[in-house]
Image (tube, rainbow, N blue to C red; front, side, top):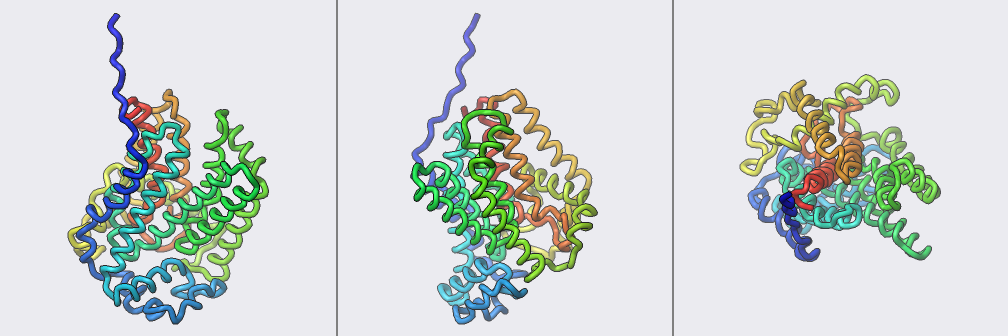
Length: 389
């Protein structure tokens, strides 16, 4: 009987080399975006917003108890003020910061993957897939995508703080890791509210780092071992929701917190499936690198079906993508990680899944954060098939 040839294994590249590559690649890929101008929301939020033309009105950005154009997402607007002063009002300075933030997000994601993935050789591929995915174009090349870049970066830093807390051997180390998690999580939330899923993501990381056992056993052990910590961050998240929904609401359309989510559930399912379809076949892109937004959005090919969840075909394709990943890895050793990635994708995308009527499209820049677990699941599925492992 002939022996089955062994699948060649790709060696793991040096971590510093991967980090340097992740920092450099956005500058190569998004070089045309550096010459982009202020467009759409940039005009109102930056050019016409005197509050970000310096640091004289920083106090307005921390008045969380009242609705305001700058207290709604103060981390984003403070970063605008830095860029306005640094670049003298030039849009190039804003684009440069977007590229830096995207690269730093790639490094943070890679660092987290080195911890949570059982095979470290998959980490560079998952990080590169997330960093270079065409669906990231709108978040990176559009200045107003800054909120997504900041939210994702601080979200990842918070999860790294969670890893530090879990691996610390002393009380001081655990306290330091928890402090990093809370501080970075607050910054992520103040950049964009979709960071409200962070406590659940922290619990998932905790469960993944537990000794091998069933999913329920890991989750139960994580809850028992960190009940005080998770209780505190749940209270912090509740306070943030009260602020965003009651004290200083930022939604464009009032909504009924009890009735509207149930009414919009079919739309939410279509939106989640649409992001999956876009992840596999992102074209046509609403934002591109030739002219960012080359024509009016209403006339742009592909914009109509993309509005608020897309059509039935997009839904079916998105569901097929999820089903394909599950079927392809159902008997693989890492099938649980693929399922966890899909679950975390749905969790991360829930805040922008049109459960409430925000009068917003299923915009491409919303996928910046949800693409993280999706990239990890895709790399894991490929590794399970024997291609990279």
